[in-house]
Image (tube, rainbow, N blue to C red; front, side):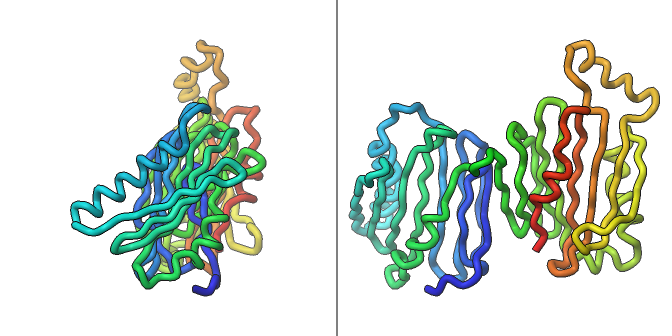
Length: 299
């Protein structure tokens, strides 16, 4: 298989590069334990699983348990299963298996984030699994060099600052929302499809003001039309309004800085025909808004 153009897939900081026409079909879990699966248009799949384990965990035993699950499924289908495991110089384990399908993969433990990651490429007997794995598996990573966490789902690619944990998410064909929290600070990254349809009867300013009105009802803010990297955009700046600041008193009494300030930006990307939004509700110390904007890819 030719390399061609690639797309990034990432969840909870575990990322991989796959051919552009592969599709994310399954995703779940949290930072401590999770998975994702990406399917080719044909019969190949990339799976990545991770779990937090103690330093002295037996990696070979972990891999044997993973392969035993595949073997059990093969026995149910009454097909033979065989596998090989090879220890590598860096402490990781590579493996291959064969039944009515075949697969190759790797298992390693990251001492920095304390996660064990298993990544495997599987497919039909006729598929060039080894050739495809030679350029996909080396792209699997579980953390970035600067501590920011990469998220890449259905065309939304963004990096999130250290300390922010996923609180909730929505993954739909026309709308994606990722909400993160760090203490009282909240970061929301959104993506809407079909921007030309969404903005057919309204300007971006009118549409976005209506879209955020409910969520930002406790804030007093200004909306300004701007240019963002050559794209039409709107910027919101503000803070908690009037007597509603009383809602922050519990945080003040607990000696926690309340999240008083709002920064947001939404832009329509002509090339991808999508609308993107980054919204940060933060304390005076959390000045990360511009850095986050710089790390959101829209096309």
